[in-house]
Image (tube, rainbow, N blue to C red; front, side, top):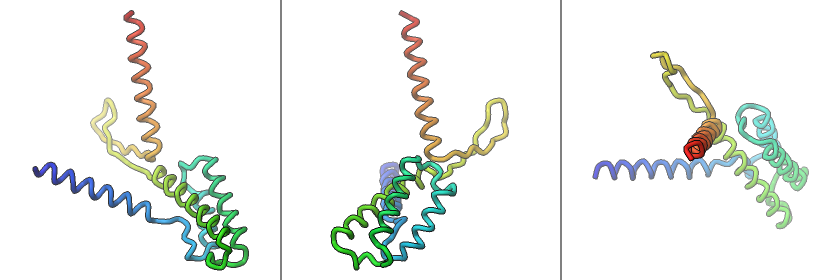
Length: 154
């Protein structure tokens, strides 16, 4: 019974944490777009989004340029024509989705692990995406090794 309650609480915290993370917007059109654009461009060049692909990066820059072109000198979305406002909101959503996922994948996770042949633990720091790639590669290698063993026994 206690185990089920604890599992339920952990699941509730995980879901609420994920929902909170998705509510954080990178671009908020209620604030100065010029400043936000400058910040996003600087962040794209730094390690904040180190796991963003070149295609995603160019997509973000193109969306930022489209928003800037639609806004022009006006920094307020409410002054735009409805069609332009919808286009700007769609670009905003696209930017926020790409950058939120890239930030989550770029998060650095460190673990203290004992290396083979030593009793001294060492820090092993990798991004979430790097850990996922290593896990997938290990699974693929295991499957291939099992297939080779199965073929050699025939």
